[in-house]
Length: 459
Image (cartoon, rainbow, N blue to C red):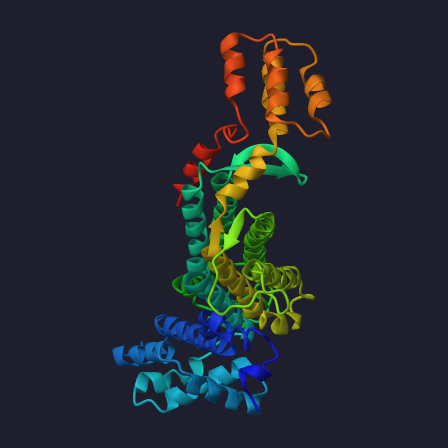
């Protein structure tokens, strides 16, 4: 019996609908589809070299090849799997599938081109192109839109709450006030930086034969400038050309891709933990959903499950992404197959990332700021004004300003009255003293509002 309930991975069971966007791209179907795309691009390129043995393809033949890629179906993929059952070789099965289709074609130029399908290629020529195409499509079509939604939502929240004072907590202790919007802006700025680094990774590919030297190419067709030709095919597919490889493209760019996504995830995980803490403090409430249960035994609870779910999946994603990044660039001599099975798990790392993005967005959509609770904490923390007082005292040459405030405030409960009585005794210029006396924990926020709005305005 095969149902979502019997799925071994929750990505294909409980959470299947949330990662549907990646399924067609990073599944085995997606891999096979991109292999077909790579084979077709190579064949079309060969047909344009002007070889006597391979006349140019007719417009109809070229159109047929393009349709084989564009309309590639699960039925086509299954046919390839059926062929693989005999060949016990997945890329050879793709070659035979294309030869089979060409043999059934009524186009003479396709019939004539049959033995040029997979010409001079090693399996990795096709696979490395396919994997790069898969990752690029997943990034562009699925991950980036969700990343942008996260950044946009944080921008909205940072702008809305740019001026809302909030007590900071360094080392878990009360610290100089900030604003809620500024703290959200801090995370947003980090996520934007991580996003830009992720998008900057260019994925390389190669099509240079069994050990990267164009041996078979040169032996069979010595008149072609094979590196130039190979570059044109790779770049025509929207990838960056790698000119120096062994049998395999060394996956260094893929490692950078996985590391960059992992760094984005790490920043988001930091945000999830902070929000969890702010919910615990009561700074945020959560919108209730009719019928939803927070605890099976404590009816009052509304748990921050979305941020906890995101944190858990970010951890799983980064564990897989880190392994991919560390393992893939390492291959014995000119080639070993340890990368093959590992590469089949790209969808696992990206899938858990996507699941976390969805959970985090869902959690942010439920947040309700408790302004009264924020104000209560600030009003109970007059000791945070020790910082500006001692700094002003330093400017005007008063003796031992830090030490005086340390003695007054450290480890003690300080009230507004206590602090103002201390300030009244200070020998400061009258306007300066009046300015200090007007200061409250809620107004001591520096440039927090301005900084929050500046970040919220960034794309």
